[in-house]
Amino acid sequence: MDAIQAVRELGKAIQADERYVEYAKAKKANDEDTELQNLIGEFNLIRQNAAMEYNKPEEEQNKEKLQELNAKMQEAYEKVMTNENMALFTVTKQGMDDLMNQVNTVLTLTLQGADPMTCPTTQSSGCTGSCATCGGCG
Image 1: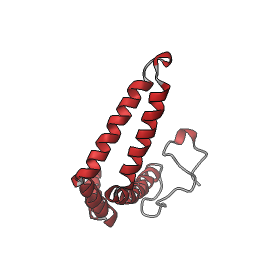
Image 2: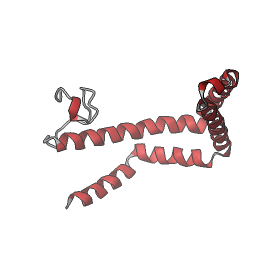
Image 3: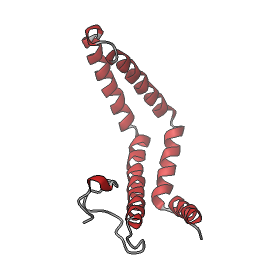
Image 4: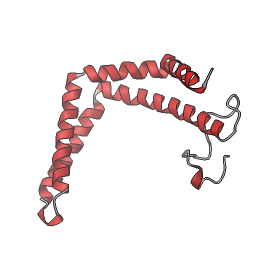
C-alpha cells in the first residue's frame, strides 16, 4: 500500500470514529436549524457593520455607535452560542479537534523519525508542529 492509499484508509477510519459520527450529526443539525442560521446571519451583519465603522479613520469613527454595535454583537453571539444545536456542535467539534490533534501528532513524530506504532498521540511539550522554535521533544 502506498502513502496516499494509506491516507485514504485513515480517512475512512476517521469517518467511522464515534467522534466524527457525532460531529457530523451535530453539524447537520446546525445546518438545518433555521433559527440558528438566522441568529448567525444577524451576528454576521452586526459584525460587518462594526467592521465598517472600525475601518473608518479614527477621527470619523462614531464611538457611541461602536459601543452600541459591540453590545449588539455580544448579545447576538450569546444567542448563537446558547442555541442547543450550537452548544452540541461546540462539544462535538472539540472531540474532532482532539482526534485531529492526535493524528497530527503521530504524523509529525513519524516524520521526525519516531516509530508510528509506538509514538505518543499527544505531546507534553506543547508542540506547535514547528521545529524552528523547539527545544526538543519531551
